[in-house]
Image (cartoon, rainbow, N blue to C red; front, side):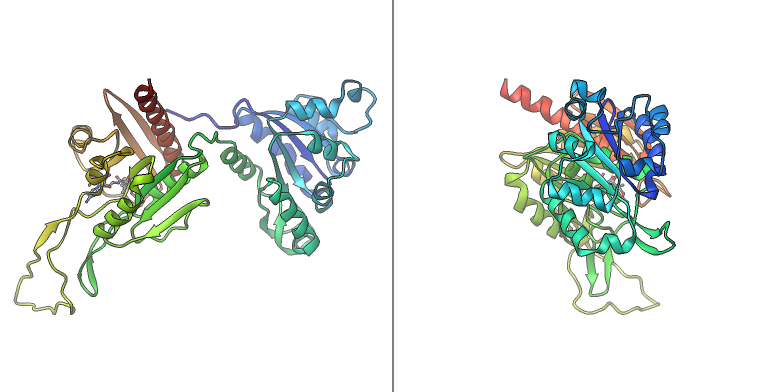
Length: 408
Ligand code: PMT
């Protein structure tokens, strides 16, 4: 399964304003076309001083709209037609002046008139000198636009055309495409609460030692990000990891399997989908020493271990249970063991991965075999971010299928 970009088949009006970064918008047209978007270009007068309309027309394959009072285009109400055609309006680069004009609600050129007439979502990728970027007037204007629901992509930090260093560079075209693709993901989990566990657990032996494992949390955090992108309210119950919380995700930090269990069960009653990606310790020391255990070279050390509570099974046997997705980390017999866990733990779905030296744990790429009742799908090796989105697509499909059967 290779997932289609959320921008495939999407109509995008790309508006170019007056900035030296306008040359990057030529490449942006190509990158947007690569993911299947259809592009019409609008240019302000100032933009035409930096890059020619002929370049943009040749790349986009369509006439470039330049003037609000164009006698030919406006014979068919060109700016209204474009506003209706657009699924998204993207201004890249967006100059400080164009941001100010939009914030004021002006409609005296083609770009501002088009934005005013459009009900489609608007994203802007600012590009300007770093002092202009930090200028309070610019920041106020941006806040006004954000309050109206405008999405601001970037800017990036680095060397600027004026020779200064700082924030205000246009994001690279590929980064703009990736950020827009995330914004364009259909919000199929709007109003749903997804609870996800991630990372390892640490089971204390004494005040300085614990039993742990190699989980980095990358897979679980990527799943949390994908669920948030799909519009869900996301609670991420995380073991000890060194990762940044994805935007729009509520994170609760825990250490032990028992703490993870308690936090999950606190949320289970209002949870729509539960995804257990954490590598939870199966055993914990029977008792925790209050002082550091001293080394005695002449003796062996024996630890008594007792099973931890199985969080996944606890959720799967909860009264009104959510849609329950488990993971299975296996070094061998991946398929058989995963299918057995699906049955034994009464899960709706299980995502199995092969783990071992440099595979599954900690690395950036992974592959999954996903099983549910009577069917399965393989998600081949890919970055965990992409894999998580593909897994989320499968989960949403199976969640909807189960609910439509329940409601029929
Ligand atoms: O974190 P990364 O470095 O990115 O690595 C990702 C991963 C390999 C950890 C992840 O993809 C993964 O496989 N997670 C599940 C690891 C695991 O514990 O698998 P298991 O086969 O031992 O457990 C089966 C399922 O039961 C899992 O969903 C687990 O979360 C759950 N479980 C296990 C024990 C327990 N006490 N409670 C549980 O809920």
